[in-house]
Image (cartoon, rainbow, N blue to C red; front, top):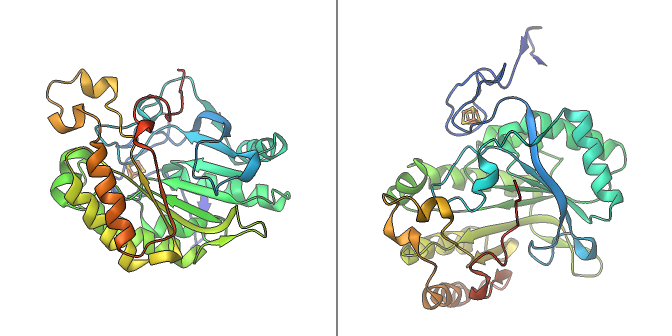
Length: 310
Ligand code: SF4
């Protein structure tokens, strides 16, 4: 419950308008919204994760906290095992979450990596505040889908050090087809502006190897969508340029639920063309973007995917 200016209390989870879906669901008493999440903040997995971009977490890696549920729910989800509630996650209140962040630090993590936290933003923001007040002292990363409400992002103002959003789609036709979100791109564009307002241009530590503040914007290229990807890269380079890192990901893998679904779009049932990925990387380089990460196309398959044993 949150106290409002008029002395009344309000619950941010009922009716819930935390994400751009603004579905207004009552998430109390075990009920869920489009994101399939109740108000119980559920962590599927927490671990030291060394697979993020090399400037994140330093030698200790990232203390990743994977939250269950997602407000975007792309049909090809690469983390399908955690985007739907599994019944096996652990529920935390804000004090417990803060302790988890501090424990990951004591285990050696060089950063805390909040993975898909936005549908739990009020609780997670309070937990980050508590952990920072208790001396967390390492960067906190917000790893999210890009489909975020600017007003909800403001809950994290002054608390997040590094934003790590995806930009997944440019065309409204594509985002409607793959995520039932025709408003994806304009919504993500506003969200990115708010993130950049909060953290500003990228800053590395004294070693020059570890990102302490700023943004890395990820785009995972999808098979059959080269033109959509080029539009995204053009936008990011012209809007932010080398004030942010752009991370182009080649690891798209058709997951079993897509391969088993005969109605799934044919292009999503295959892996990414190496040639198209290289064309996109060349296109980005041609725009003068030097703050960039690219992957080997051999990262397709399960090699680079976290192994979520459920
Ligand atoms: S966070 Fe979930 S319940 Fe809240 S508006 Fe978005 S989809 Fe609906």
